[in-house]
Length: 307
Image (cartoon, rainbow, N blue to C red):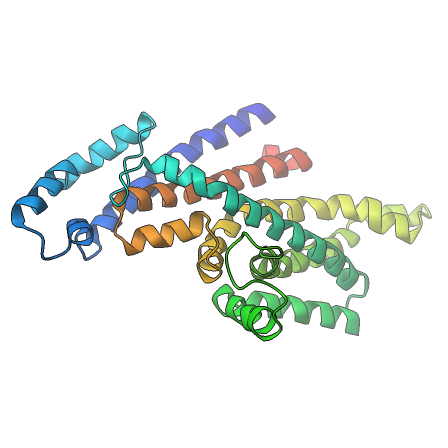
């Protein structure tokens, strides 16, 4: 039963990725601007412009270009960058480690902040400690990355000079981007942890444990924690995909040489194949994150297998 449901989820992910690839392809071709102008300049000779247009298949009907694009995806050929003429997959693979490093650090920071904060708020629900914890959480959710990043940069890099402004080669260069990206995630996870723990404490299983004289500490950290873990872990898995969305802004602010910065650079240069590859990779991570969340939910809560 479990394996069959997972297999069905995987099959459902395929048309989702196909839909993303299709949507990105047609939206990029509707964006104003000509990649030939971006590569050669508007003063280039007409013969050179036409030759480049033919080489890039831009002179063909859009449906032919779309079919050529899908054919390349099916064979592992994601095209060639219009700017440096290197394979798109090669460019993406070069940038993925930097993004993975930033995403892992941000998620680790979010977990280290969210779990104690959520437990503390739940344990003191309705008191001043709860209000303080949730105020911090609300602040973390409300502040956007494009505002928090420059603020941290001005204070800790420009003002105090403790940390580097941008890049990833200097010691401590990971701190500001990870805090910028991880703060919002920590805020979301802490609120989910609090609500899930309080909901678990009101279940029949917890009331039965109390009736049998089980200690309150054991109830919080065993019975309630197991019940609260399902929605929290599911939310954490979903945040894996959200990290890449936030990384586009964070990497741009801190000039972090990852996949997000590569996407912005490709958009600015109208490098269609590279933009399509970057967006498809980000979408694939989103789909995989949702798939992971589904699988974890099925594994932790067998009741979902029969819904």
